[in-house]
Length: 286
Image (cartoon, rainbow, N blue to C red; front, side, top):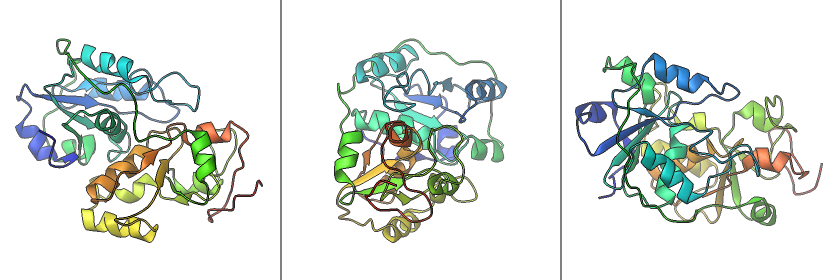
C-alpha cells in the first residue's frame, strides 16, 4: 500500500528496524566532496542502512547537466542489486534535512514504487534522539524491483526555454547562488531568467525536520503557488535539491511540480541567457 505520508519520523523508523519489509538507504552527499558521503556512512549510520551513491546509482554520467537521471531500467537494476525490491517500503535519509534524500524519493515515486519515504530530520535528528547507530557496512540479498520504463514528471532545456514567462520556475539553490554572488561549480553565476528563488533550506525547521504542511503551503503561496498552480518547474544546480521542493509541495498537499533534471548546470553550460540579482529577471538575454 502507498505510504500515508512521504515522511517517516525517526521514532517510527526506530520501531521498525527489524521489519524485513523495510529497506533504508543512506544517501548522504556533499557538493564538491565526492568521497565524504561514503566516509560519513562508514563513521556511523542507521542500523541496516545501505549506502546508495548519488553519482553512480541516482545519476547518469554528466551530460545534460552534472547529474542527469539514469535510465530507469539501469536504476532499478542497481537498487535491486543492493536489496531494494518490490515488496519493500524504502526509506531514504541524509544529514541535510532531506535535501539529498528527496532525490531517491522522487525517482522511486515517479517510476511508480508505492512505498517510499524520507526520514524526517535525517541522521541529525536520529543521533540527537540517541537512537542506535552502527559502523559496519550493511548488505542485503539481491531483490527484484519492477519500475516504470520512463520518467514522467520531467522537462528538458528546450521545454524550459519555451515555457519561460508562462511556467513558475522554482530555484532550490541557496540565495547567494541564485543572485550570482557566488558560483562554486557551474560555469556562469546567476539563475534561469524568470525563476524564483526558493531555497530548499526554507522548507526545513531548526530541528532539521520539514516544516508543518500549513507553513509549507504558506511558503509556496507567497511564491504564487496554490491548489491550482498551473505549470510549476523545480530546478536547482543539477537536479538533486530541486526534488526537495517537490517533496515539500507533496507534504503541503499541493500538486506535484515538474523536475528539470539538468537544472542550472545544464542551462548555464549551454549558452542560454542568465539573470543575476534578487529579481527573477526578464526573458531578454543579458
